[in-house]
Figure 1 (cartoon, protein in one colour):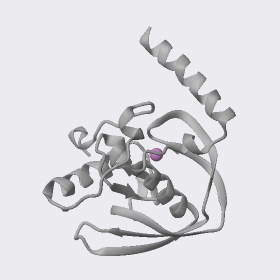
Figure 2: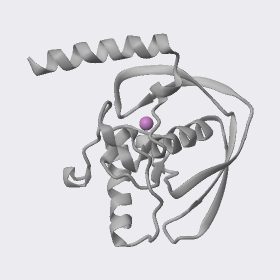
Figure 3: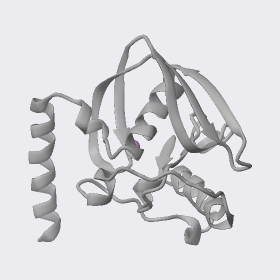
Figure 4: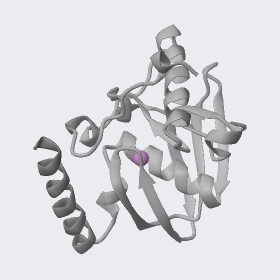
Length: 173
Ligand code: CO
């Protein structure tokens, strides 16, 4: 996989990550080539999900592959994804390519139903549980400008903010 196809991932506290993304009206060649680059970027960074705002585009597009960067068997490209049903509750540790050096437990719905468009602009419906459900909620959150650290306790959040400040200071030296 060539380096030219990997995109730079923005990290917290970049303002683009806080913005609500806009729907994609037309799935043109630009979108298709962006999807390829996003998938490559996700795999190369050992992620299982990536949302367009993370690579600097505030548009409603996510890529997900819970089979992981080794297998690369279940790539899902979802355009304008929307959660239409949620049920149950689960809690698991999450991380994010845009939140460096931190993982925390996050409460999510255990099952979700998502509608979206695929690259052919067909309407698709996905019923997900377990890791896929968590991953979809995490990525769709990105489209609303929400990071997993927005869903943890104030105490843990403050701890992370302090640690991050220290790192940023050190990296400037
Ligand atoms: Co993320």
